[in-house]
Length: 470
Image 1 (cartoon, rainbow, N blue to C red):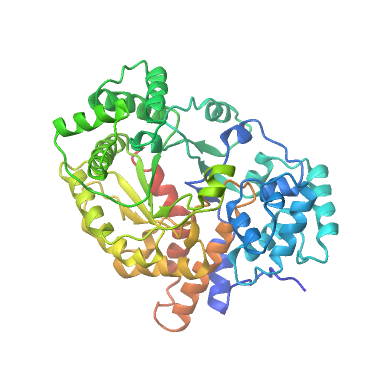
Image 2: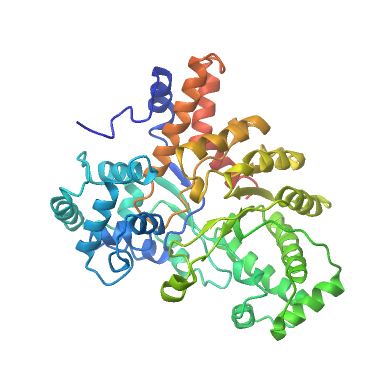
């Protein structure tokens, strides 16, 4: 008996109808992910299922460690077959975790396999999957096409040449738009030891001497313009917490000078620098009609022993808590908005307890003369919130504090080319939520309104939001 049935997660007749009629066959507009532009440009061909599933996937790594899998079979030197076996054994214990759903959605959508992957059949499954990968010569572009993805927003450093994006854009045989996203994290991290070497690289790629904060802004303006020329529609910022500290020009220049000299900066000085840089960058994004994305709340690299051995982004992160995020966000948005230079903005908070707080804050700054609908957005359930329960919490917060019908919907935020069934997962959750409310009488049985709601959140709102004013 199939686990991923046609009506998977759809618990009412209305939910089934909404999904089948208005969500199922829509394309995917993946406005934020971490896919490799190089792999897309070169149409990288995968060697085996372990490479696709387990290389770089810290979601799975965390689960495997919790199941007592030795690190050699997680990120170490064990064979790909041994790692796959360890994942299958872990999957047996993942009932109730979205990874269990995602895994079986991927098996069915990409390989036509309905059978559960278990500790009993892992060897047969491993060989069957690898045979399909060889026979189909499964590649990055094939998976994108098969998933019906029309737009991919990658995550790119300001000094990136964007050569792979250029190659993709020049290839008329590949219709998916792959746009770069401006991610200036290293420019924000004035307290880090690699700050000065990084600014030297920024100097080199802009032919702009950077001796003052004003010089830095000139260099960044050049890079924003360069990204814009090559199709960028968004920026992205990873912040541990939201901060707001005012500083005049003299203070900022003094802080910048200390940073360039490698001198120790106080927390207050760091916060003043981050605040000012965010405000100034937001104005640049506004000029180009970009969307500013703020991802905050990740407490990163908490296990220092494994950080030393494996480096960052290897599965040792957690959810940050803070008591001043609402105040900081209100002050930050207010400052940017003073001269009507607030760009379209999406805020993702990793602490699900803050959904209502952030949604209420964003409502303060929706007013605009351009007719942009829900100009400021509470972002989809991100990372630790990428679960059924927290997707529902996030959408309810949007509905409570704003316009659910204008929500831009799901993103993958993934490094995996097999991650696109997460959009199906989200759409099923959305349709089940709305279907339940229709059948309970809380939402009317008005077909046009329901179609616009489901199709909008599933796809159309993102197209409008990210491409308008460009």
